[in-house]
Amino acid sequence: MIDFLRQRLMSFKWAFKGFFDLFNSHPNAQIHLLATTVVVPAIFFFRLSSIETCLIVLCVAFVLSMEALNSALEYLSDFVSSEEDALIGKAKDIAAAAVLIAAIAATVVAGIIFLPKITAWYLSF
Image 1 (cartoon, rainbow, N blue to C red):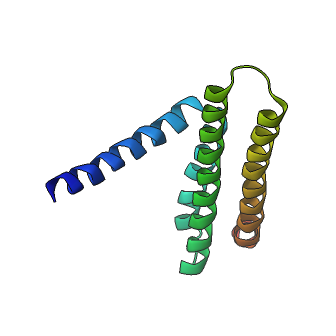
Image 2 (tube, rainbow, N blue to C red):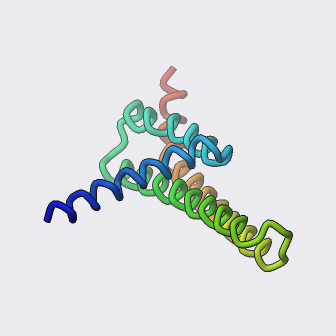
Image 3 (cartoon, rainbow, N blue to C red):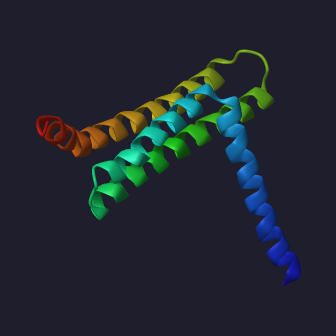
């Protein structure tokens, strides 16, 4: 039982190691993290409903998760072959497209939620 608990704790250690590598080594992940630092305070400033907050949190988690998977695929691809390979290049491009799709969807959701609130706030002056 002790070994089981120790292994579970180590899995968190490795996950946090990956988390810090993602945001220290990947500029696109840093951009997504910056966007997150803007969106999270906006949740409180505009007093989003529980549903709106959940949608924003899910979008943020989805984009960051896709970025993490994209970065993992890049590491794995670079390990498999340091030479240029057409199929590896396609895999990397499609993984990057997945991040782009998630980011566009998150931007649309954020626009639907925040634009009316920003407009109302601006017009209140």
